[in-house]
Length: 265
Image (cartoon, rainbow, N blue to C red; front, side):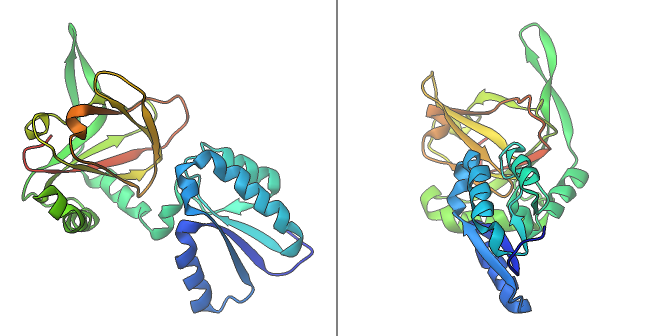
């Protein structure tokens, strides 16, 4: 993309600022300039396309080329629409955290975990559970070293608050927007009567994650993306419900990894 100025501008997510700056310094890419948008935009993905477009337009005449170090990041294709209109390319992937090379982790889990399809009774019939599952109990090796490292890090960070370690990992594979999980709380076992904690690591395509008070009330909505961690503690499993709804939008696969302490499902 030819410009009147010189050099290359990278418009980056603030979450990648340290890594991109380190690459620039290590490789002496003096002609490379980095402008970072706030990392907090990941909490408001609908604002990302407009912010990127504005920065492209105010920078257009100052650089020979512009490149965007964002992935789709939950914009539902709107960022790609803006970039097509502006003639700018971006890094591939559903979420910019794939810059950290976790996409191979997703691929490895999708291909090697012994996923199983389950059925459940609904009224007077048996239906397919709309996602694939695999459960790793206590002392069962996890399917990838990254998950073991994540569990260890969670135990270090939350061990004192929780009062016990995370011991199990339940994995769910949402193959596309038709896969989902209905409103529920993790109340099988101790979660029905005790405060506890569930930590969810999300890999792959962003999906909506909903929370509402048990018995009804205003709901909260979070766009959970690749590499995001959501932790529900205290009485959340007894007093709130959560869900991942179906969507008619074209979305890619997502793996949810739920770390739990003993006796909580």
